[in-house]
Image 1 (cartoon, rainbow, N blue to C red):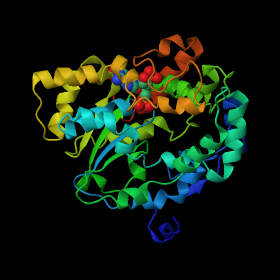
Image 2 (image 1 turned 90 degrees about the horizontal axis):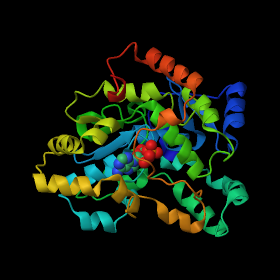
Image 3 (image 1 turned 120 degrees about the vertical axis):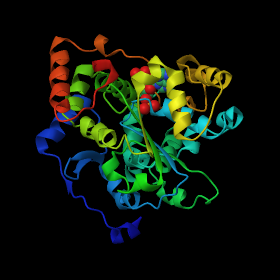
Length: 352
Ligand code: A3P
């Protein structure tokens, strides 16, 4: 990735303050890959991100490209499958055959792991791993996951429609991307995002299993979790929602009226679906079917013993934050949300 030095990249990085590092460590426990703050909004990227940041920012786009973007745990996987099936004329056979992760290279996914620290990740994992933990396979997986996918995307034949997953905010993507590519952005009530991120971190054993949600929340709402600040992320996409190449969805809208969201995606992609097709797609996308769907549920990772028992990638699939927030946290959240919505007309369906 050395060539990226030649490419224009307007942002600088800033190290975290020692107190911030300490807060993360004490609230999350395990903390191997460090963060750095990027650009004027101080987006929290994991340090390996910088090895491909300029390549991503300058990536050549094609008019056939479709991005599914979000702050993590906002319904990305759900949206990805919906978008892919609509764009591919409801080819369920192919969707079952090729895992979603292969259909959608995850452009920023490499930043979560540093290949040179694979022994360390494996040591941490082995402390809580199941009896079937396969250390070698886990280290190979880390090496594979830590490879940037931008070269792979650049090499995709021109005849191939590219579907790309990202959790990056718009400002870290190519500045003129909406002149060329289509973006479907999905947003969700941040309280549910926080709960879901907590479980997700437990699933991959990225946090100490003894830490309660309250510790995680402390990090999340202070903007010290991956790709925070959360509201800046959502607002950047919200500001582009009238661009004909941007479709802005809310998780809560998908939950409330999936057929309506399917129709919006179909219109956006110039497709037409009849009632029967919509019904079948709703059934395919239901949480119960999704949990069982091997193409989307990441359950294959359980075979090497790295996923925590009692947690899963496809989880509850509904709003549940009230069960996690005590009075103090509820007030903190309300204040945080209010402060961040003063300068925007962004309103979450769950807050109207
Ligand atoms: P919960 O943890 O609240 O259940 P992402 O794909 O961005 O990582 O988002 C994951 C969240 O979307 C999880 O939320 C997951 O359960 C939920 N989700 C995934 N598939 C879903 C579906 N078919 N219906 C409803 N929610 C779904």
